[in-house]
Image (cartoon, rainbow, N blue to C red; front, side):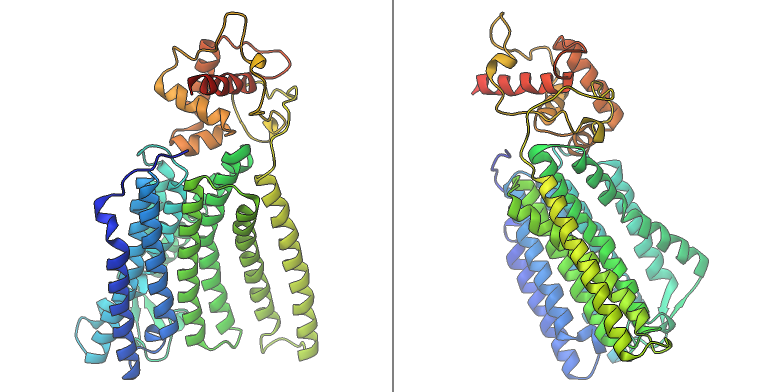
Length: 461
């Protein structure tokens, strides 16, 4: 459980300041839109969506800070600020273009790149919610650096031909890109970087047990929202060509999707930080991410099938899309239901390990049978000498052992403590030696070490 602490003073007034700033931004865009400026950039739906997301993430930042997860709280505050910056840059860019200022071009370029930082920050916020301590993992540094470079390169190399003249950002033909190969390479690297945290967290979650598995799974689902948003943007481009979707409508839809992804990630971060692992809540998070992915697949394939250049008639298109919807959405519903059940499965009695799961390495599929039973009787860990002691362990070894007893795999321990899996393996070997746990017996050393820690925790109360 996390201790309740006072929030960072700067965050106490953050929701109020965010709401006031967001209101001003929406009002300014409404005035510009009423005057016929900005097109989709001043559309009230997109503006309100971004403003609402900024306020929600600011509230999440305050709650994360109060729960003791200050790193996640700071990142959530940064997410709120990035959404406000996107909204503010829209005001500046539209106003500059309307007034014909010479710096309108740079303003539009900055606005056109401002959607990238929120994607990085929503991932980092969710990932930080399951971390302990203030150390920053290398994955966070890599994601932040790559997305930061992508933002800068996009702002410097991309120029609008007719800013806000009814042509949206998803219409590639409306933007000139200098040094196109460089821009394409950086874009590809940024897209790959967005998959780093989801893969890392899903791997850690599926190899862990008990509440750790659920918390890591919620954080993993949250980070998945970023690449899904990018896929949605790409599908909007497909929907324009060869599809026939109104460009401005597609661009407003992207703004709403970005805002929704930020809200989803912030809510998941709060859930993961609180350790809330109720099956209903975890199921809602996992199903939400899975159904969003299924909807994107249906929309993408359906757009291609319904494109004007295809030879299929309206009836055939309707049948194909209907069948695809039933198959994909139905499969996603069943699959995410099973995944949610796996993440929240009740612990079972420990069994004898198979296939070399006795060792310290891995902590993944090979050890899924070695589930720790929290309610194990004291006689399972107390010997004739008396009460159990974990004396001699370093502070870090105690943290590793506590995470192990909580059900975390090696990858799960590494994700929470911000260390490498090799370091976790070394700590576990040292722990086994200090606790005099030798290979063999009815259960493996991981299970016995976890039972010792749980019994020690009970005796310490």
